[in-house]
Image 1: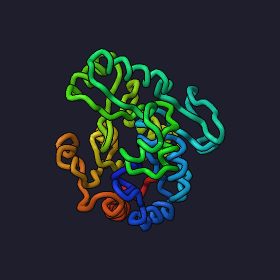
Image 2 (image 1 turned 120 degrees about the horizontal axis):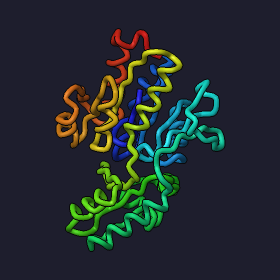
Image 3 (image 1 turned 135 degrees about the vertical axis):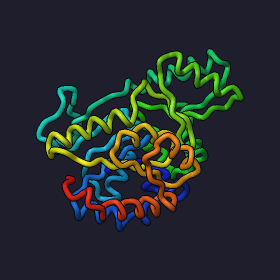
Length: 268
């Protein structure tokens, strides 16, 4: 299971995942790995993994890197680097490069923006409804710069990001600039590692917004958790199912229905 967090496993407004507790427990009992895949930073992801009792690899900052608990796999790509308790596979460039690129495209287009690097913790709280503690964790970025477009010519700014060979993503609240990495690349990499250990695996993806579209398409069974983006997202992923409910209630519904199907009998 590869799952987004905001608006998917956790509520978009309350940041609660309580409604998903039964499905989280069911995955753990069946020993089905739940890989969290989000725009969140490593410290944020670690907080959520502890909150739900998750010990599997996780994907940070829109695919900027995969953090794999040390010893989780019997082998790793040569590109994996030891870091603390993890082996890390990086796809993104250093954060400072993104901050500088965003500054340049803003000046080039005359479109003012404000990124997380410029925001205080209080400003991040106001824009995201995060608590002070979680806003502090969200500022500890490595591969992805969230930003708000303040000018009327935002389309010009986004086009300029494309011209410079960088990537932009529209999240549920803010845009993000990256150096070209994506959740999809990281998901494919992890799926191959699981397959090397376990043979054929079935991959299931859950997400709720445009930033999840590419990674959902790489999974065998994409599931769209209901949101204001759901209908448009479904047009991009014709084989996706859509939950009846948003957030953790919809996530719980999808997991409980999916793990009851025979297709998962041979899964890890």
